[in-house]
Image (cartoon, rainbow, N blue to C red; front, side):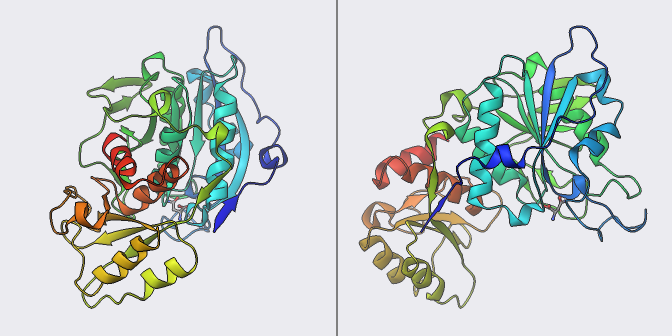
Amino acid sequence: MVDSVPATPVAAAAAPAAASQPAQQGQRNVVVLATGGTIAGAGASAMNSATYSAAKVPVDKLLAGLPELSKVAQVRGEQVFQIASESFTNDNLLVLAKRVSALVKQPDVDGVVITHGTDTLAETAYFLSLTVHTNKPIVVVGSMRPGTALSADGALNLVNAVSVAASKDAEGKGVVVTMNDEIQTARDVNKDVNIKTSAFQSQWGPLGMVVEGKNYWFRAPVKRHTMQSEFNIDSITSLPAVEVVYSYGNVPRTAIDAFVGTGAKAIVHAGTGNGSVADRIVPALQEARSKGVQVIRSARVPYGFVLRNAEQPDDKYDWVVAHDLRPEKARLLAALALTKTNDPKEIQRIFWEY
Ligand SMILES: NC(=O)C[C@H](N)C(=O)O
């Protein structure tokens, strides 16, 4: 099954420019693309930090409520979607990435910020880092509490995002996420904690911090992204179906067979431990592979990584390992890889490099 993109979705979804703030000389231009999430959420009372409706506040209101932004950059907003991020689809990813790609080609745009729900924020950020060709900063940001809650985190997260997007020193660093004062690389960051504002973590550490409008960098990404990527959103119109099968004690083969039956082109196995596979599941994955379905072995364990030919003979079975990518990010990379090749050796090369 293939998800396809409607012809001109962004134009239809885009809102007029947000209430803009007075330009200051020499300021950089940042476009905020709003997609919804808790950062645009509203609760019934200030006590509601976890019980609220996501995706309520339009981007112009979000920006108008933050006069501090005018000190950081010349900012305008577009409403691309107004959804909670758990409901993001492949179509949403393609529409958003195409809009980002078009914006970064404009000489009057220095950086792009995407406001996003936190649940799948890391997936979208990784997808953008794999598919948008630019050196300009792209920053994805969300919040853990709605703006109506006590100690809401969205305002500072968003000011930090715009500040990083407007920074010359953020150029060439790929897509980053600014949450909780940290600057994280899209590839490595994940939502590892719920409820708390320290939700976004990376096992390899943040790239740096943003404090009072200044960036402090400590490392740079080494995996291929943006300008070095072999994938380009401008030439991608659909994503092949790649599905994730979660493993646990007593797991049956039902989900694997069902996904093969619905036409999955690859199955990401979220295995136990070091990506181990239950003996009763191995034949189902072998059968899937014999029908041309790619098998990507990842782990449900959040940290560490999956070694090739450890736990399972990947060379013999013609399987791919997901390296340190979480299953949901492996899904995206596998889908992009499949737009180029059906050779598991090539797909494995891609998993090592991105
Ligand atoms: N904090 C959040 O943004 C969670 C929300 N469910 C979302 O992802 O849209």
